[in-house]
Image (cartoon, rainbow, N blue to C red; front, side, top):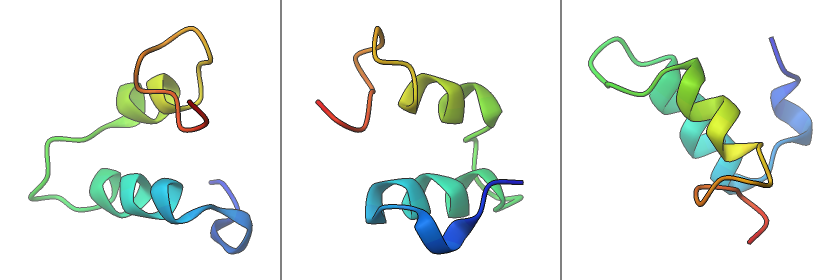
Length: 44
């Protein structure tokens, strides 16, 4: 599990979504957010 203390606000939002059983976000979304070749990349 990633260290949440070093996450940006965007990452924390996504991480909370992933860990919310009522949300559709999953680790694919996490991978997309950390893939610089993806449109959902956090640093764009």
